Amino acid sequence: MPKGDGGSWNATRPGPVLGGHVSFMLARPHMPPPLGLLPDISAGKEREAIVGADVLTDWTTPFVAQFAVPTAQHLKLRQGQQDEDILVDVETGSWALLQQEDSRWVVWQGGPEPLWDAVEEHLGRWHAAGTPAVEEATVRVTTQAQTLHW
Image 1: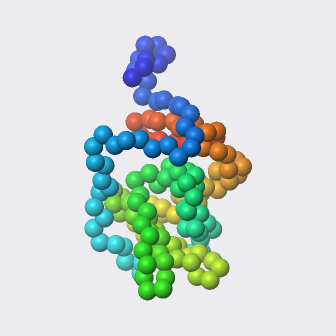
Image 2 (image 1 turned 135 degrees about the vertical axis):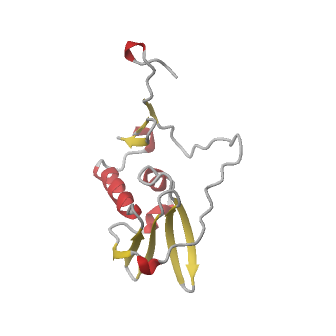
Image 3 (image 1 turned 45 degrees about the vertical axis):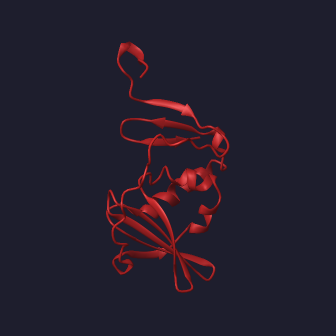
């Protein structure tokens, strides 16, 4: 790691985000942690979602959203005639389930971290900045987190 000012090792590094649909060859299998049982939505808090799960269909929006909930996994399930989008973070035990009801989206959340609240807040800041292209962003990596900045 490069040395920072004063000769000490600097554990923070900013850098640009590469454009396009960039992916890297895996050096070894990277499997997400096992999910276990899916959440009991009757135990969650329900509210109307500001942003629906339909925003997760392109490439850029999920890329931006993952910085709000970096350890969450996104699942798409079909229950009868209803599609469900579920975010599960097995590290924290947090979860969010989204369903479209007519023209609105409803979210149920449980666990210590309201995952969809974090996604909506992060996407809201991205939209307030004018939804800049990924190439206009900078990632800052520290020993605690990775953050995306415009």
